[in-house]
Length: 181
Length: 63
Image 1 (cartoon, each protein chain N blue to C red):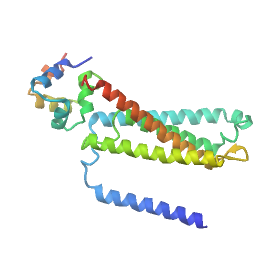
Image 2: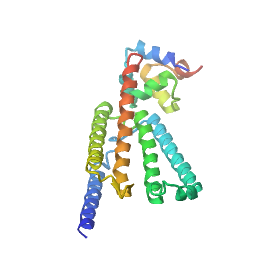
Image 3: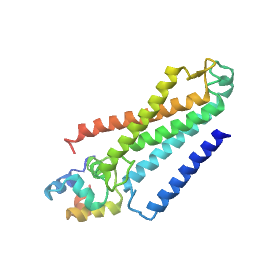
């Protein structure tokens, strides 16, 4: 009951925060305006993410019997796989957006790119620490098996780690091409 | 294929990619991609670039 109440309050705060952001910036059409190439690249990223998810869901559905009988049946239970595939789709989308420089709009571009990288770095660190604590305290496994609740932080750590790696690779690529541009 | 004519027209006007991008209200990466031939701009953006560089569509984009 207490945990449910905490979750409810967290969700309420997020919803009110979202409404606040919409009310504050909703009428400012220039704030996050993307140019035509960015919009195209974002559409491509969305398409790639959706296709990846569809293919993975199809593959899982077709090979469900094999997973059900294999020794991996705990890790590849439907509840875990749904989260896993959604995270892969999100990673594809965010990775392509970072690589194609379409995470922030045209206005104030360079400054906001730095802010974005800082936030990714922070979130990667938080989830990395969380993952490290779980390994150190031995709460990563439950009865010798990886549980759904211990798998979620691992996935989040991996998600932000992927974003961070792509951001760093993008930075390297930009610094290499700077002379040409 | 690289758009060298656009690159030289921009250099002749003494504009950086960022300055041209600001005039056309797009990102610097978009200008860079057009010059490198990685992106085909819409006719609307082509016209904006031509206006900014004082060139015609034929001069910059007709092969």
